[in-house]
Amino acid sequence: MTTIQKPLATVFLAGFFGSISCFILHAEVPGATPEKNSESPGATAAVESDATRPVDKDPAFIAKWGNALDPDSDCKFTMDGKDLKISVPGSAHAHDFAAELKNISGPSVTQLVKGDFTVSVTVDAKYFASDETTEPTRWGYHGAGLVVLADPDNYITLQRAAQRPPGRNQFECINYELRKDAKRSWLPSAVNLVGLPDENPPFEMRLERKGKKLIASIDHSGDDWKIVWTDDLPDAWPDELRVGVVAVSSSKEPFYPVFREYSLKTEGSK
Image (cartoon, rainbow, N blue to C red; front, side):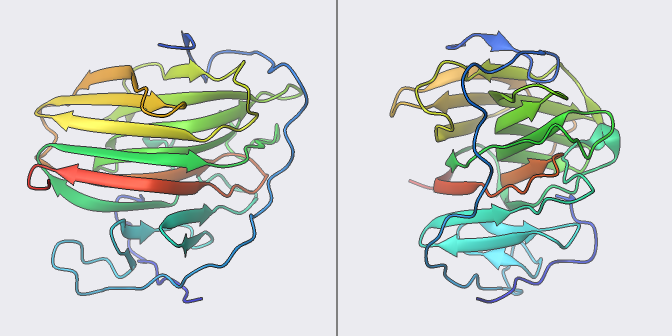
């Protein structure tokens, strides 16, 4: 396996179940505690580097996905066929994506996109967020999904997530957040996953840009998209944004999300 070279410079350090906030609800998930994370076996292909790509010039480039960014230099990006796995270690520090906390260290893979686009991905992972948080002002958290960035202080994320209050069972949700000028501009919008038949169901997520509109949708049953949030993009955001996937952890447990069926359609694509 080829180790991806990561940039040393900071580059972007990069309702159908009922809407509730993942960050303010203190609720237990009924049933047994989820099993702990374990890396799934299987052959992995080397990830190629391409330092000469004309648009994105970061050295760690994954074909069709974009540039891999690992600000803390302790995560791994692995391709298994068309699937991308991001391995986030259990560690004493958070791999967060929170500009208001001055921590944008969550590993990401993004590419520059100009104008309107539709990006979607299916996230498949075992979630076991420890109640020992590594972010003092937040609970233990695991999240993985889509990200759209204007700059390190201005971005949108849509994540399949799990959060664990101290001494409680974890709570699972789909979590949407907008940061504007390093502030979380609104309380997170979340879709409660309690009651689904699977303990850790894979979820397909989609973000669409239409002019200054950003539409977030999810689908867990196959071709049954539900819009969970619609936002007006800030006027200051440029026409060209970085688009891709991100993994976030403020838990001492390791996290191994797998991103499948990634699709990016732009104005010029068919």
